[in-house]
Image 1 (cartoon, rainbow, N blue to C red):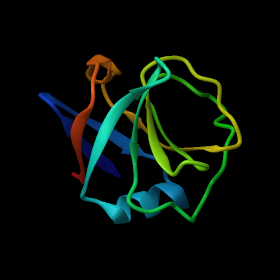
Image 2: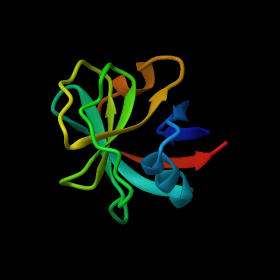
Image 3: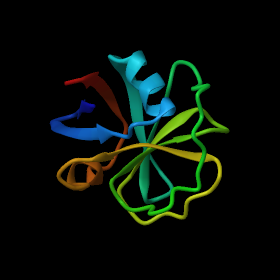
Image 4: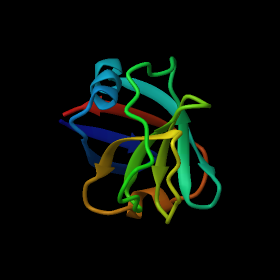
Amino acid sequence: MRIHIAFGDQRFTASLEDNASAREFAAMLPLDLTMSDFGGNEKIAYLPEKLTALVRGPVPDAAPGDLCYYVPWGNLAFFHGRYESTRDLVRLGRLDGGVGPLLVRGEFAVRIEGV
């Protein structure tokens, strides 16, 4: 499944993994959230409720462009830089077309919806 993500003047898509966590996330769509910078290598946005169908990491081939769920905080993590995966990360998908849109700094309202 593919999803659309929009914030500010940025528009891009991501392809979701074929796993229970990604399907549970997709069932929540559409979502209107707040996205903000975190840690210098990601943007984060908190889901309205925590995912329960967890396909825990570590992500075997962690790379910029991954869309993950961070279990302890219940947030989405849009990685635009290198990161080290842990058991607390669940990869939901990967951005299509690169991480360029995530390099815009700041806090934004974000809309995530199915294609």
